[in-house]
Amino acid sequence: MSDNDKVECPECHEEVEKDDIVMGLCPTCHELDDTPTSEYCDYCPQEATTNICGTDLCDDCLENYHH
Image (cartoon, rainbow, N blue to C red; front, side):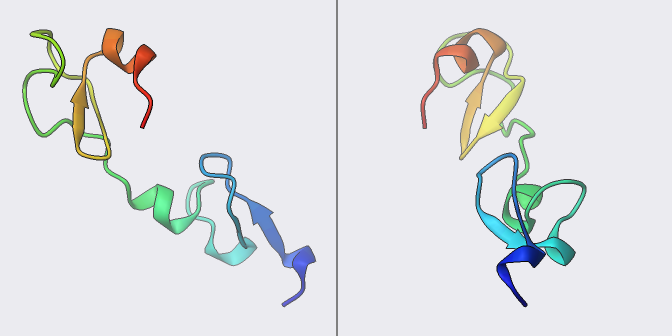
């Protein structure tokens, strides 16, 4: 396939084959599960709302989190 058959993932910006896009994302980003694994944020006592690379975060801490 040529480079013309590749598109950029909007999440990670990797170039992937058009046919590999799943629901608008590359397979790797599509597989990431952002469901919290704990009830509480890892940085404060608030309720966790998302999971980034194994870190449970509330909305406030997510704004300042850099992974």
